[in-house]
Length: 447
Image (cartoon, rainbow, N blue to C red; front, side, top):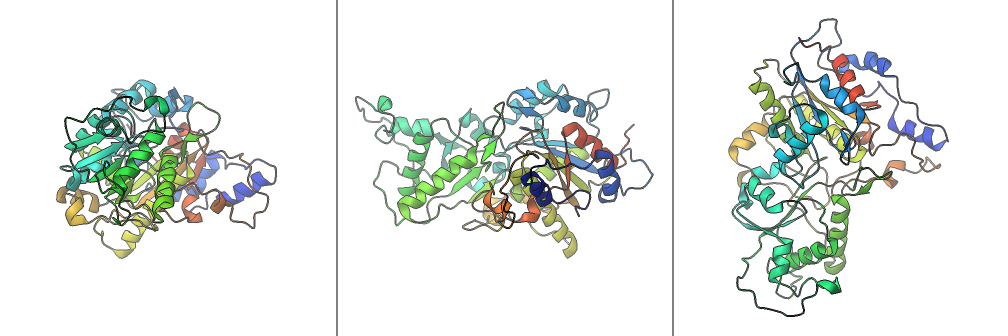
């Protein structure tokens, strides 16, 4: 139900006609949509939360390292005089280049409120559940403290691209200045690499692309010749599918999704086959929102809020990740509600070509499975802000007979495009307006 605002396609057509799309007035929007919140739109004020916030970070709270002004104002409304949150809040970021505690410390400093690591969900956080891989030797790609991140998630034998390069110096030869002058035999042989974990975009793309392809085409023995008949290849677990993200620059920057596009196309060009993923996580995957809801419920239980959490409000700036993911999860919740029972978790990439389904018995520890399978929320509402990737004044093709959204779909290859999934429930100027909107929808007036 998105009748509270004009369809996104109408906004796009307005931009194509040379006039800026008109955002709905905030007060009017709240009045029209009040019945959609779990507060019910009645006159009774709620002092205990029956809802939770899922906040994106880049483009919603910060641009690069610069706080968005509305963010501090918004978070002063979300905490009491002792700095305790008045509603359950989880920061759901597709970033994967640091530990949760480091991100929590960054957010606490930027927003001026105390934030714990239990409120932070990185794109790689669900890897804690993939215990089948924790004892295996895995190659990790990305940047930041990769070994610390991998070990914190439970991996016992992670190997970085740099370590692999040192052990096999003949493999990385794109940069002539980094080619070895003298070759020394390695004193320590690496074990077979049994999986590849993609945490985020690396710094030296050419090195990572080359060595990952080497590992995939040699079944984990990158010093050996290629064996193209080894298909499917060893498992690839990928975090963060964002094609682009917003920092201080005026235009979006390449994200990990762009790196994945490169890897997929190189692999297919060499082998003629599709690169397959064991799992894709980070927004917009359903698994990410299931894990985020688990964290929301854990906060509510810790604070002893008796009111069940009925509605999640996902606040983001990206149609293809934040809005798509929230709407996809809302569809999942509503389907479960219609069935009358909660289905067991299936961490399956939505409608994907070549997507892989997790084996529940093998992949997910029973305690985690039970927690995630008992999703209690009834709805997940998408709230789009205009401070990041989304630009309401962007120009689009004048020929609206073409599928505009098809031509600019930035989602991952393994996600089907569905126009309904990129239409937000609400559009607001910034995160402060989003908090005001949700409080009105929920008739929320904390003590």
